[in-house]
Length: 260
Image 1 (cartoon, rainbow, N blue to C red):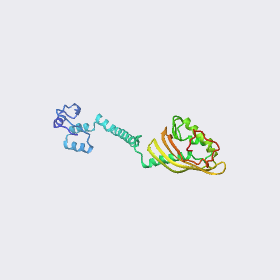
Image 2: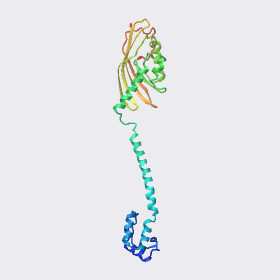
Image 3: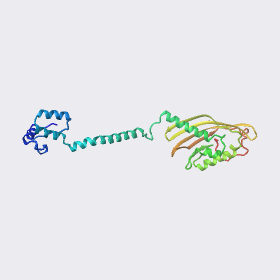
Image 4: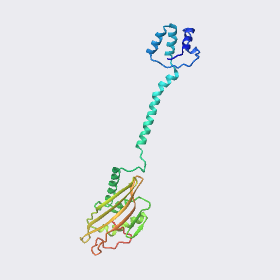
């Protein structure tokens, strides 16, 4: 505790009964809460019993504002610290949608898309082949498809072409195996990618003759509602020998989805 000389003189003159709060101090006074050892040393130095009681009472008397500050400060500090830590964690974990992809992230997306393509064209899997191929596309909305010198933008038109191919060609192939020769996938962003691949499909005709269809395709993927779907495609078939192409006994209509 620090007090001016005038306050000490006033307290000694007024006697021990006079509380320190009743003493009018003519100068500024700074009051702190010292350790007990410091208070004892100061009291011994005064060697005045009345002054001892006044100073000891002042030292030991609670100071509401100081006491509140000391009690509440740790709690307030803890709350502020937790808030700052939470904000830092959010900032650290948040990733902008247009943030650059790492090589590992690009590789993971490419592997996922490759798996979707291979699964959709796996002709050895039993079940509805048309539905499996159509699983690459969105459930609704437009899909741009270019093949055989024609372009369609309707999902219904695309599905009609795939069904025509399967009716006139696909279901007549014996033991077909869709084989991918090469596949290049470029991941453009977290929600867009493009894949270009070449393929061939060895099989036997209904007459038992070996035959192969082949071609190339480029598909544009977009992630919609967390699902990767093809929104545009371009298909190119290798020319086949009409005399050797006996996989189908009928002529496919112009809507044929030529790449499958």
